[in-house]
Length: 165
Image 1 (spheres, rainbow, N blue to C red):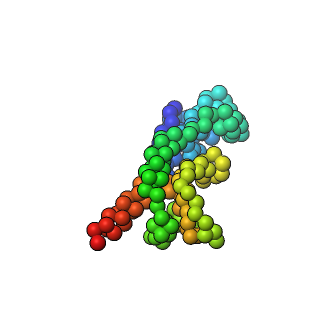
Image 2: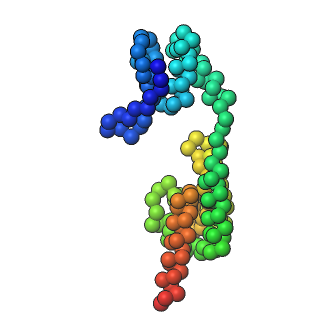
């Protein structure tokens, strides 16, 4: 018996199954992650039931090492330095905000200027992430590792076009 990755046709999600010969609950289930499939296999080999698998999975999840997005933070710290160097104006922040999709931009009632800073909500809330916050004139940008460099290029392009006139 072994853990095998399957891709279901028409879906973007990957599932894990236990492949092999035999009978039992383990062959009827799919697992959302590899580590859960491995735990199920261990429990099954010891003669455990589905309820034993769930207990083992919860116990493992509590003890497993927490990952931290250190590479993302490094990229964002570098981008933050570049953004601070460029010192974007309120007009540039507002214009970028009008051009971008939701998830990067939120609108607020506050007209005050938020200087660029690293904001880590990754461990704080579900769906949180590490990003650069900057805002002005009711526009709040949350720039992840990709949009931060897009914002830098946007400012450079905008300023380059102005200087040519």
